[in-house]
Image (cartoon, rainbow, N blue to C red):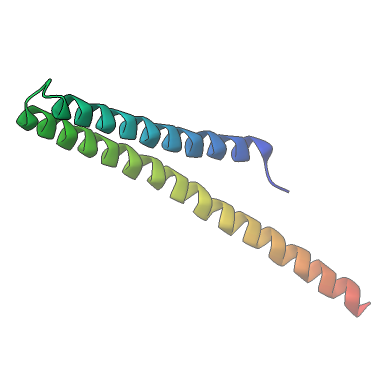
Length: 95
């Protein structure tokens, strides 16, 4: 049976990843507005966008790495559980 605590921890990470990316998209949009409104020079905005994209990529890389490790562990764990369940069903069927 799935561990509710593990499921909740993964959900928190997936939500955080979504919210980070949504926030980055909003910041990118605001930078575009600042450039478009000629509030800041385009070269400043380009530097900000590049730095923002780099930061976003790093956060995404690290969070998805953590998620990938957890999903791989779950696949292994649940695979073993299912194999045991199937073996028990076969044994019962032979009786």
